[in-house]
Image (cartoon, rainbow, N blue to C red; front, side, top):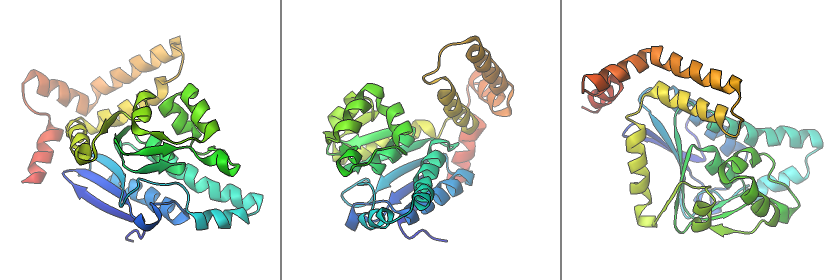
Length: 268
């Protein structure tokens, strides 16, 4: 079934998911979340897709929750609120754990849940005109569901300020605190992202998946004997894999690996 709140396209082995509710600044509701989850899972299964970009149509990346959705939630029972909150939690978890690399294309406002989506992507690139805000405390709420991803992306110290104050900040500040990896003028945003994608699509698909898992394993953990043993085990398994053997052979033989030549054959 075609999504009603998203626009999805595949170009040059990249799946692009656009939030497509520009009239309300791509605000989130339960339908959007279900459609994003389903689309991510479909693109993950598509062998022709090597990377995924998440962006927004219109003047915003994503301005947080849909007001009508919030109004409905205000009348929910505790049990209904728990079930409803699980929708965003599940979608962000799906995005964060996707086997393929993900890139957030941020322009305009990225507020509340929008910041959660940006943080759950592996790489985030913002327009210099983008703005950010963890606005929940202004409404007497907390950024609970998005917090695991946001804190990982910007660090605990910066999160302490922006989660508590709910003050907006600009792209330069997002870059300074590490929430985004790069910033670019609006007219150069896509070129900047395309340069990153050019590196991602020629990397080994299995290696990308295993690298994502490795980062999640070692990020923020102490260097213990168990971690040392696990990392040694993982590189041994990667070297012994078909993709690992092909990558090393192609390097020694000064040729492109099969996963790159396969893409080239598909493009002919």
